[in-house]
Amino acid sequence: MLARLGAKLSVWARRWMPDPLTLALALTGMAVVSGIVVVSGSSTPTGAVRTVFEGWAEGFTSPSLLAFALQICLVLVTGHALAVSPPVRSWIHKIAQWPKSPTSAVALVAFVACVSAVIHWGLGVIVGALLARELGQRAREENLHVHYPLLGAAGYAGLAVWHGGLSGSAPLKVAEPGNFTQSLSGVLPISQTLLQPVNLLVTGGLLILLPLVFAAFAPDPRAVIAAGEQHDTAHPRVRRRPQAGLARFREGNWFGALTGGLGLSAVLAFWLLGELQVDLNFVNMCFLFLALGAHGSIRSFTDAVADGARAAGAIIIQFPLYFGILGIMKTTGIVGLISDRIVATATQETLPLWAFLSSGFVNLWVPSGGGQWALQGEVLLTAGRDLGVDPAMTVMAFSYGDAWTNMLQPFWALPLLGIMGLKARDIMGYTFMAAVVVGLYVPAVLWLFR
Image (cartoon, rainbow, N blue to C red; front, side, top):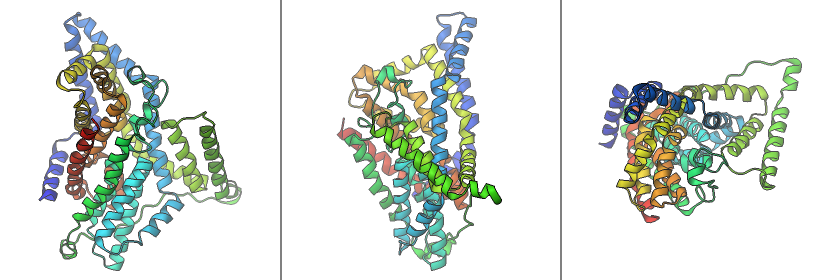
């Protein structure tokens, strides 16, 4: 029943949900109109338009926000490059031999996808897809009758836990000195966000719950055979151009491995000396050198980065548009009005729940954790400051809400769907059920730690 409901929701989304760029432009128009309306009460029409445009331009061209956008793109690109490297692909092939039943296969995919996403969300997206794809092929060869769309849904499970992991956009951004919300929250090290007990309980609990949920919905093998939903497609391969002579020697595996090893050692050494702290820049540096070392060949690494950049291309132009919206909201006072409304509705005990729910709702329309934080961060932290809520709790509640409705929004599933040869409607029924579990479990933990 839930699978059918999920399919209907997917059909509705395909019919009515606009293209992400179209949505960003539409939201920009709504912000412009709203800003003019708010400012016109205390200014001339010309002055109101000027104020709105200046706010938009200030946000669109903000150096700190544009740097943030590049950081998020690097998260995806470096994670993708590591996931398709030869050692990781070999590891995926080996663990795909472990499951002995359809149920254990589904549970393994969900668990590995979640653990990988906690390490790095870009890694989780691709590793989950490749493992699900590998298991689908093995199941066909060994007649395991695994439900292939369910494997795909399990491979997407990591996006439900990523924001509480080591590459979480909001927790890592507030850990940076000079971040755009520092005046409201100060600098929050990961010891106060990612390593606090509430996050360990939320993320650790979901690492157990989500594999169990997906395994529980593994259909009877006879139903799989009857529906013809056990199949596989050709493995994706990173494109490599032939090399010859001196170029092959110069760019052999030793060079990339040596460079990656030296670079990673330097980053870790400076961290141990206290010269670097764990933030988005630290994570990106580590995964850049990890991926380079894992590929060994510079050409192989470059091709993997190029493939990852194609996946990031769809979101690059959207970040400045959302930053422009944020600029309008700040300049016209809309941020303050929204904060006042939240403060009037929420209490110190319920603000984390409001942050969770509002973040989940916005994520359906703005499927980018980084873009969302740019839009909502100041609003939620301002409300939290006025109500006396620990800013670290506000940041994490926002993070859980953003990850929660990824199970209802298939935007980040596009790489997985392409790798596995599936469509969004094939997996949305199962991810809908995962969203129900997350939507019940996380608020319960937030209420426990209120």
